[in-house]
Length: 220
Image (cartoon, rainbow, N blue to C red; front, side, top):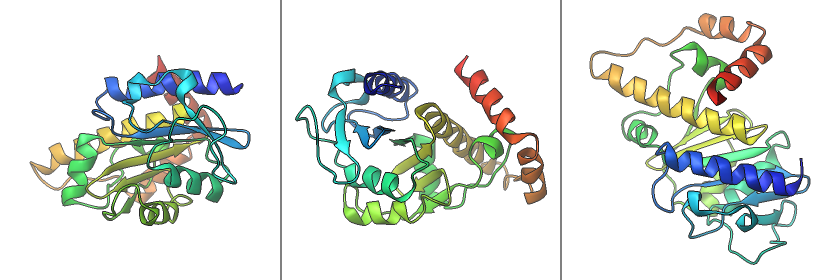
């Protein structure tokens, strides 16, 4: 895949995040890796305003901006540290989904409650509130990035990672739906989570084929 194709894909998923109300205004930031660079949303833009040529190219090893002169998102360190820490990450989606934020105001551990959540997300990690845009947040986030693909940020939002943008983006949708389901069910009684055995059963269902089929269905 060429760098221009990555830029176009970023603009496509950026529009999805706004259309699905996962961010408002200029909030949130997303990135994707291509070879030794990452392409990150520029500072000061609403995600659905970003044209393909405006994604900021940043050298992952050095952190140097190597193309258009726009300033990268203020969360640039969180993205850089994650790519450096885990070479299997191909994309990062950081959003401010309302149900996820509401969940972090009252809880920390989001249980696995249904099969799609088990297959696409699994266990969700949690980082207590840290001042946004700081290296302290980047450090706290990167401590969790090898153990979970979806990380809730207390009083702040959600970060998901994936091998590609589609995987990272759909994890965002599934975690937001999971937080919504949890909060709705909690209004009645304590939600019933899947047991560890039930989660493992989902994982044993030719898991890679199941995930691919599920992603295709969600993209249809």
